[in-house]
Amino acid sequence: MTRKREASESGMYHAMIRGVAQQQIFYDAADNKRYLSYLKKYIEEYAIRVFAWCLMGNHVHLLARAESLEVLGCMMRDVSGSYAKYIKQTLRQSWPSSARTLS
Image (tube, rainbow, N blue to C red):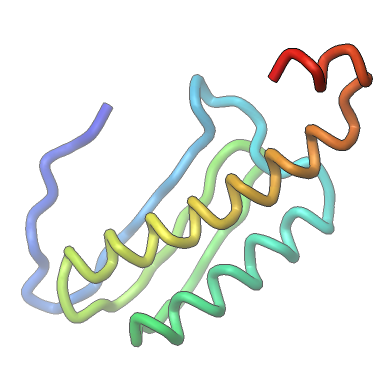
């Protein structure tokens, strides 16, 4: 469920993403590293300062300062999209060949 977001006067935000239906999104340390590499790339691109982050098995929390709520949203979209492509490819490679032909 999406909540109504309000712009912060301080520019500080608590951002969170989670897997669909609370499904697992991180399976091992390599996944965590990959997510953090995307996070680093996009916080630099969008000039966002991240003060704290927490990667859980099925969700992520960030405490960040951004120029605007829209900029933070774009950064989260890009990080999540990049990671989703990575994890989809990773999981597809581990599926049995019969499952791969169905997708």
